[in-house]
Amino acid sequence: MNYAIADSASFDSRTPVIQVGECELDLGVRALRRGGKVVDLGSRAFDVLATIALAGGRIVSKDELMEAVWPDTIVEENNIHVQLSAIRKALGTDRKLILTVPGRGYQLVAAASNVRIVSLPLHESGPAPEPNPLPVRDALLGREAAIAEIRSMIASARVVTLVGAGGIGKTRIAREIAHRLVTEQAVDVRLVELAAHGTRAAVIRAFADVCGLPFVEEEPDLRSVASELAGMRGVLVIDNAEHVVEHVAEIIGLISHTNPQVRILATSRFRLRVFDEFVYRVGPLALPGAGDSRDAVLRSPAVGLFLRRLFSNGVNADMCDDRLRVVEEICRRLEGIPLALELAAGRASVLGLEGICEGLDEPLLYLAGGYRTAQPRHRTLRAAFDWSFEMLDAAERTVFRRLSVFNRAFSPEAACLIARDAALSNEAVMDCVGELVDKSLIEIQFEGADVTYHLSAPARAYGREKLLAEGEICTIFERHARYVSEHLPALPVEGVASNPLSPGRAVQAPPFMRA
Image (tube, rainbow, N blue to C red):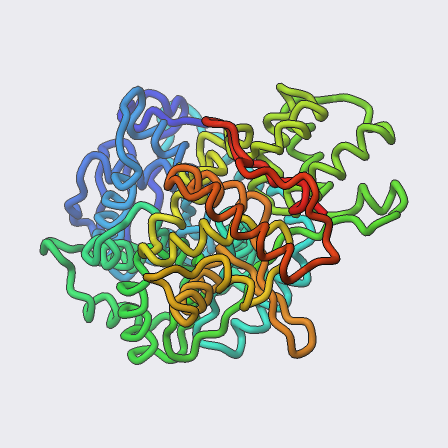
């Protein structure tokens, strides 16, 4: 429900005075009072507070706040943060009654001891409306074991970082854990969302905002923010830290030193490299096993996510055995990566299952059309890789695109043979491989004492586009063909083309790479 906050006539039978801690929010005269004295609060901040308070304990989403406070106006989401900072400052010691619920919105803590609604009748009184129930959330498929392990890590480690490739599901896992901590254990959880912040000052402001700290300086004082968090006995969730990792590491170091009781759960495409950090690597969703029964295929998390998104896009087709086999093939070719599965399901609602399956030869062209509410980097598969690729240095970019010719796991020796040149020694190549593993663009696999590396199918497609753009595609494919013929003679090499691409066409692996 949206509320026309500026129009007191919209409250047809009463003008509520909502008491929050020591303050009274009088909607009739649009005033916030403490001890009978009016507290200075701007008009927009008042509207935000009134919208949250009138929800009766229900969580109010950012979109609902935007619609209620800024109707028919396009404004930056940061406006909400600014107004909330002003509200928390005005509430003083009661500022913690405005709760940030990670990933969902804002809520007035509705404990009987600190929140009560007083109705001043205009014409007649009636019973207060029942608060709306919490909105139903999509269950996270195939992540229960991960959630249990991460929660166990949080209980014993100061800093836990969820690391993984873009679109692998780090944010959803972190926010699900945050929600459970709030609802099941009443833990004080605060979310710092950093995707839109790129400078040290902006990052510090994001931390200051969750504390309810006002700031007037161009760059807020970091020590003041850390000091404010010194009394926190809960979990600080830091989402999307990879592009500002140095600033985040600095803040975490100060917070941990000031308050060893606070626990930090961060998401990033690579490690923060801070003291006391424990890393949990988030992997793709489990695929059905070879030869699994129909029921087992339907129960697999990757297939389950794809079908959920497919059906939510209005596809009501009967999932006969033939269709299910195509779905299984799509999930396997996308290697269980959640973002890729969701984008593929969205496209399948337009192109059909067979159409999207054939289109996966060029996944970066077909996998687009993510949620409008998603971060821009999660609206297309290419954008997800752009976000990571732009954070690489020149040498790392070179090694990444050259290693994209491998269609299967490869050894350190193979990586050096393919990627090295006059400017990149074997040692430099392996330094880059280590960084690419750390930044979740290459997966590392251990088999006994042996180490191999692997690029996901979407990563290979992206890397080959970069090879083409740099004019290296023929050189690197030919180098790979020589490597296969000289070092892996058991693999078939017939059909290797000297020019594996047609101009302007997305890269496809030659036959020897599909063996």
